[in-house]
Length: 117
Image (cartoon, rainbow, N blue to C red; front, side):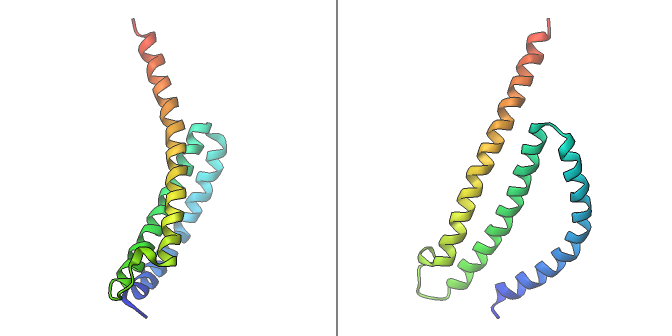
């Protein structure tokens, strides 16, 4: 087992224990999200995607580090390419979600400014 696998295992164990606590709170958040506006749901989805990107980037770093000792170009590795593809897709989803949220926020600000005498 290489260093990354050991670190990943320990971190995942700690995260799993912490996630049990977070999941109970996430259940409440999801219930409330049903009550929130579309904008609130988009923001929540963007946050969830960012958390997934964070995990994928950590995995990517571990894979590249593990491959750094070999002669193989890490960018030619199938596992690395897979993670990069996943991150790229999530990045596009986040941009779409934040773009939609940003447009609504800008409209609200413009309405407020228009109402002020």
